[in-house]
Image (cartoon, rainbow, N blue to C red; front, side, top):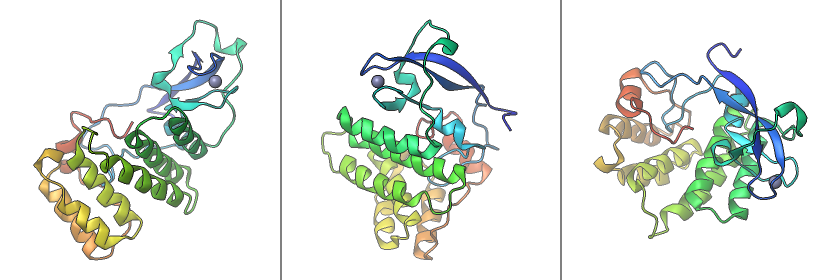
Length: 226
Ligand SMILES: [Zn+2]
């Protein structure tokens, strides 16, 4: 299964309670190319839910869960320290949203974690399992976009919000957000126009992007997908 992807066990320290524990990191994730499977909500489809969930680390002592890259590595061997708790892949993202609240991270951060929970649920193959994550992503992204002090690519996130709403079947609201997307989003007009037409037609299905649009957006890569 992990032909092009590989996991490796490493030891890290929890930034909250300083527990040292073992977790997995994804190594050898191939670079994006025009053939990489990407959906219209700007995420890369991963072949296994374990891969996405291992972008997070979860402390076995205080259950703090966050992007692995924010944990400091420790020199102890993984074999001599406790393991990360055995939590199902998508559930780990629900914990991460809670942890992000606990340490008062920005709503945008929580919305990206919730979106990853939605993608992970789908990669896990749980029927309808992603909808609660989509609803959560909508709540958090609404909060992020209504924060006037937040400086980021507002135009691109208006597009992402359009996609969240379309996937939830909230078509008139989705169209409002697609219409707020401009050149600053860095997204091809063809994409925004196409997804807006999907919303007009009442289509809430996930949509796979054609190679030329993947290439226009992701080569070089952006960070939303990981
Ligand atoms: Zn901890």
